[in-house]
Image 1 (cartoon, rainbow over the protein chains, first blue to last red):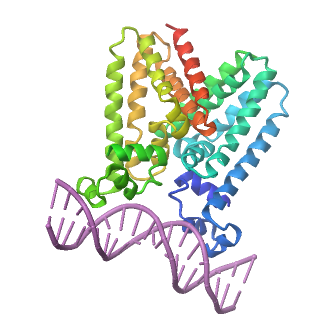
Image 2 (cartoon, rainbow over the protein chains, first blue to last red):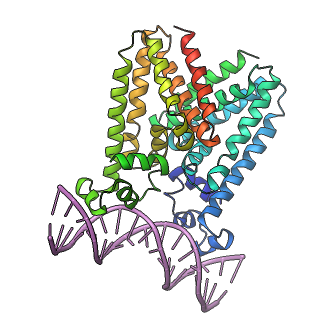
Length: 175
Length: 175
DNA sequence: GTCTATATCAAGATAGAC
DNA sequence: GTCTATCTTGATATAGAC
């Protein structure tokens, strides 16, 4: 499953064959099907794992004292992965972008990690006393996702770092 | 080619079969291969067409008198397609996101439409007297792309409209 | 539970009549 | 140039031995 998450991120869901995952994880092909009946089941498990990781990350941020600090630390998470993001995009964003065009239920489930972040950030901006916390949260997450996409398109990690800094300054300006 | 552009946008490049394009365009399957030797050739043509459309759009915006007006009008283009964007994502952003994970040259070519916009916007911000026009252009395009992705993930056209308005207000504040 | 061999099928690409 | 029939490949999924 970890191999699947990595390969879906690096090569995309559609372009990753189960044989690729079998080889990368050293798990025999047939064995994968013992745990995941279909490829869709596997990507569902990957998305669920992403959602759990997000929940853990947000819980960690909640340990910080002030909301502005927490929001800035959220943004910093993408900057920590700047080289991976510039090469392969944001793991949540690129997967949601690919799965969102499907008609089955998978498209909605793929949005869960981003939804969790959005809801959490809305709470933080509310605590900050922002007049429109939902819009502010969307501005922050859109800024993160958009710079991840641009940094990926231009293969430029510096673009990501610059924009994250810009977002952090914006957050700081209303603390 | 127009059918390919539409289906690549709606279903994604990998998930669209040439048979789908043949059916949608009423062009017999074998006939497509007379004009495009491979599926990669076809998506290359689609990206080239996107780049041309972008060039035409930017030339149209150049007709406006003031740079702030032009930049706001650029952002308005996405709001005009709000329902399509909320359902299928930005046609440039989603294609670049899918093709960017490929190792061949196609990944770089897919970035051309976004690069054209970025370069143009940089010039506009420079004309506006912005201290860091490159960063401002990245902020604008990242905001547009990020809200397109979020609006798509949440299936919420209003999110896109809100964010576009926010970006336009930001542009207006420095005119 | 593990693993190899294979069935099945869809999709890219081609052959060749018209 | 147009179109149908088909070849070929590769990927999902399964069968069945161990």
